[in-house]
Image (cartoon, rainbow, N blue to C red; front, side, top):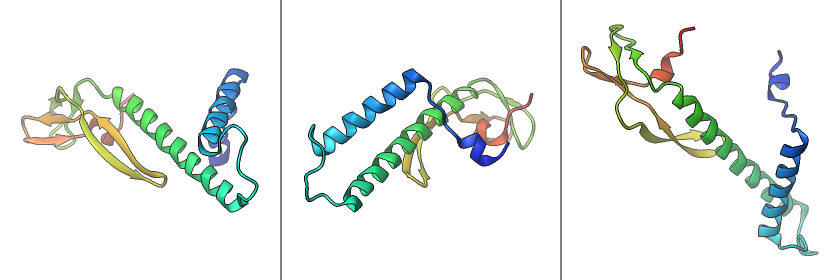
Length: 128
């Protein structure tokens, strides 16, 4: 499957309705219910659209990254010594830099008592 095909987003009717409502709310927040003033340039409209797109990109990145991290809650194998390690009780909160700006994430961290090291289970893949 091509990258373009994987990235295509097709919304069902309900998702499209919610998306349209979100767009209407964001544009009304920026320009009011009547839309942009007469002297607004297309460049200003476009910049607002891009900022909303970056905001959406960060929100999607954050949600999916946190959902992905939840899959690594159980014991994991230490990448150095292959010992079974349990995750720490509290995930690490950190910020990653994306092409759309910073995104806060919560990621489980395991502590290997044999190697005396921490590691992120998500960084080493999942065995089937």
